[in-house]
Length: 69
Image: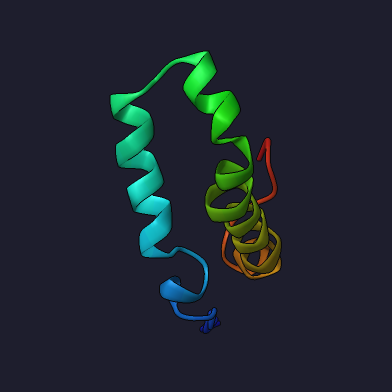
């Protein structure tokens, strides 16, 4: 059985701002910096990643075994 997985373009999930954030956090990996940038984290990293997982999950179940199998 051939399964075709079509998701949106990666750029519809992950923006250049996400990679800029990751670069910035790698240079400023400390609690005060992160606290000041929490809203940015949620907007450019957390929400897009959660949306990707939510939208990809049903398709991944079609091509792989259930967890624990």
